[in-house]
Amino acid sequence: MIQFLEPIINGILLGGLYAVVGIGLSVIFGIMRQVNLAHGELMILASYFSLLTLQLLGLHPLLTFLLVLPAMFIFGYLIQTFLFNRVMGKGMEPFLMISFGLSIILQNALLLIFTPDARSLKSSLVIQSLNVYGLFHVPLIYIVNCAVSILVIGLLHQFMKRTYLGWAISASAEDLSAAKLMGINPKRVYALAMGIAAVTAAISGVLVGMTFTFYPHSGTQYLIIAFGVVIIGGLGSLPGTFVGGLILGISQLVGGRIIGPGFQLLSGYIILLVVLTIRPQGILGRG
Amino acid sequence: MSMLEVRDLDVYHGKFQALSGVELDVERGQIVSLLGANGAGKSTLLKTISGVLKPASGTIYFDEKRIDGLGPHNIVDLGMGLVPEGRKIFSALTVRQNLLIGSYTPRARKTRNETLENVFHLFPLLEKRSRQKGTDLSGGEQQMLSIGRALMSQPRFIIFDEISLGLSPLVVKELYKTIKRINQDGMTEVLVEQDVKRSLKVADFAYILQEGRITLKGNPRDFTEEAVKKAYFGV
Image (cartoon, rainbow over all chains, first blue to last red; front, side, top):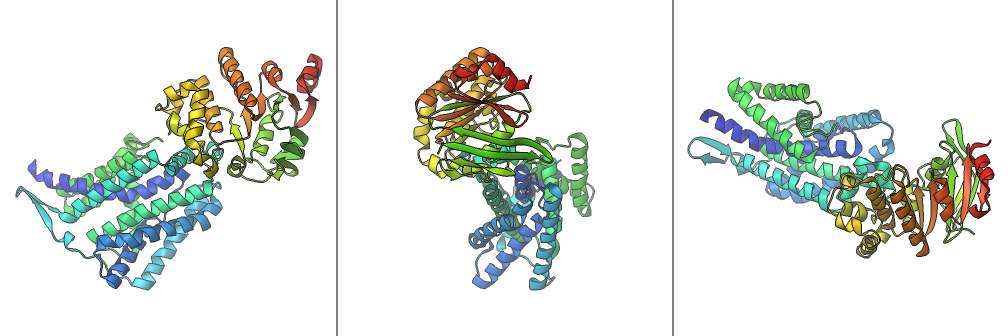
């Protein structure tokens, strides 16, 4: 039994990171009923931006947040305003196409600028680990990831509950025409929401860049993780995304311990299939 | 110029002409009733005035400013409030938050606390239930919430869309008392109603729509029952 303590604990911590990966996707679906296929690329774009800042200014990766987050907010706001807002209200296909195109452009731009070499945001956190009662090790970076994740989700939750913009986003998600009658301008709300989604993608991108190596094409694998998290936890539910992240993280590491380390991804997706079969709307999903 | 002036309005739903040559005036301080059978075009007219739909031709002026073609959020900012059909209370928000979001526009947000006090004064029940989920209220209470929410946007002009739907006569009587009271405090109002009798009793002026055209207009006290029936159904 004790042998499972390590993958469970580490799975929970990893799950925290996965939750932040999934939030951006969940928020955009919740508000606009759209799926942003460029979500993974927004993450990796932030990873590379952080790399640049790190190399040019010699900052610790966590400090690069100060530059990367505002930049990514503006980027998200702009792509919604000039790209996606043109097709809002025209169904899901145009949005999917534009986001897919955007992901291709971003991937290849990163490839051109940074070459296909493996990169990572180096810090001592990856090497250091916590020794838990001599039983097992927890990499410090996992703890940092989970702590940041809880902070982000907590802040977002408070934002949605207590601020005018948060209410405007919830109202627009529930009934757009009624929201317009309040004086809410949908295009502006969508742009701000996409900015927020880009910031959460950026946070997860930097954390991921610190924890694992990344390449220009890494966006795709994280998009799939985001999908997994959001589907397990339930579309459009913030607490659901957190639960989904935990379940995916635990399934991956426990499954990897039971079957074998090469089967981590597979274990995660088996659980995903199980959830889809038993409860398609997700554990906390509202359909 | 009237406070609201609609001239020569044509509105289409696809190929179907929903409104033909509609002309309407609302003077400052009036209560104007808009009546008609289902499908006559009341809803379409309201949606066009509030900016949800765009007319194919014709003009709408509000306080001498042209508003046809503007979006709903712009029109609310100009001082026109709408109490929508079906209440449309946000279930994601509490009663208090539903009211506050009515003050979303910068102009209304500045004085929101004062406006909230006034709304609670008008509807003490809403203050009692302020922390409950908006949709946990009964039909009549939600209607009060919807009216309160429209008031939060600091309008000079309110359109009430079918507020008696699904409510008991006693509740409707109370709501109409409130409508009169708000009007006495200076609000210009348009009532769209199925409840013909009550609506005509309280209105200064009335319009009846049939198949997209105005078939009768005038002071309700001058209407005969036959004239109303004819304007409504065409028989």
